[in-house]
Length: 178
Image (tube, rainbow, N blue to C red; front, side, top):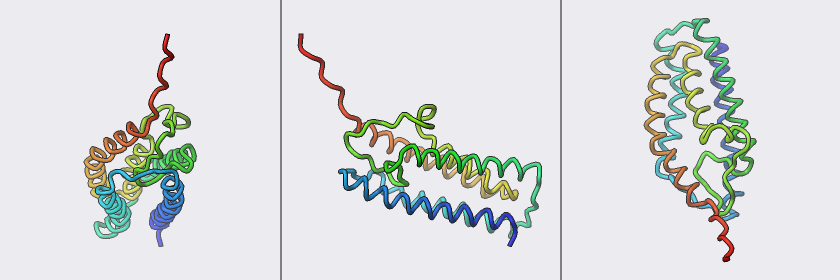
């Protein structure tokens, strides 16, 4: 087993850890009145992420891609940075983080952690990882395919999430009558 295969398998394990966290968080959210938005695009997102991991394993082997240190090492640093950003998002959102769009009504928007700087930092982590992980072992077709398909998916996912967040925001307190 190559070090790259071990890296991809570690990312697979990380994905399963995310799903365990998401399942518990979904139960927490639903117990507080959350309803799911965007369930229709969720299977496409799962398929894309599965295809990314599969492509990372198959392309270097099938196309006899070499490890290029000048590309591979910086890509590995980006993969690790993306993991750090993802788990910073998960930690910041706590039980509100999920792989699905579940918004608990009445809770204010989170503006701490990476959300101080970016509206959707987790999607930045996904995009960076989706480009960098395949490039650790020169799987450029997988990186390009993921980039294009993920960009298309985000044109659906981000507006869906923004709409859900807009509906969940508490109304401002009415002004006192003079």
